[in-house]
Amino acid sequence: MDTRKKVHAFVRVKPTDDFAHEMITYGDDNKSIDIHFKKDTRRGIVNNQQTDWSFKLDGVLHDASQDLVYETVAQDVVSQALDGYNGTIICYGQTGAGKTYTMTGATENYKHRGILPRALQQQGDPR
Image 1 (cartoon, rainbow, N blue to C red):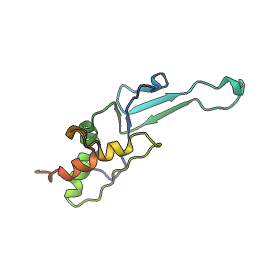
Image 2 (image 1 turned 180 degrees about the horizontal axis):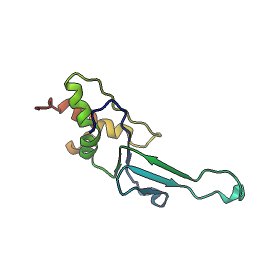
Image 3 (image 1 turned 30 degrees about the vertical axis):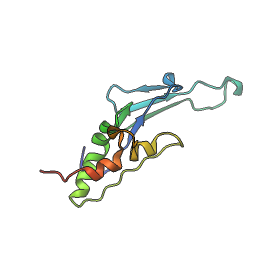
């Protein structure tokens, strides 16, 4: 991860059984995501309804494991914090999107622990 002073933005996508796969496409670079909604024809032909969004990010974590999320998003931030630098990791999203799972994880399986327990376990960088 780049250690320059900048905010990094990642999106984590964890598909469910009723996930709208046809609405989302991922860039080949794993750093962009496009979302497309079909026009609501009930509102008429000219309804100025936005149907397409494109986002450029530092990374797209599509169906990523807790381990990969930690390595990609948090490991360097925690390492730098242990060296005395400030760092913040936040999760943002709608209710039920998986923010708590990403941050704290699941207790029934060790590999499903989240960012917080992994950060507490991480040792300082042995550089």
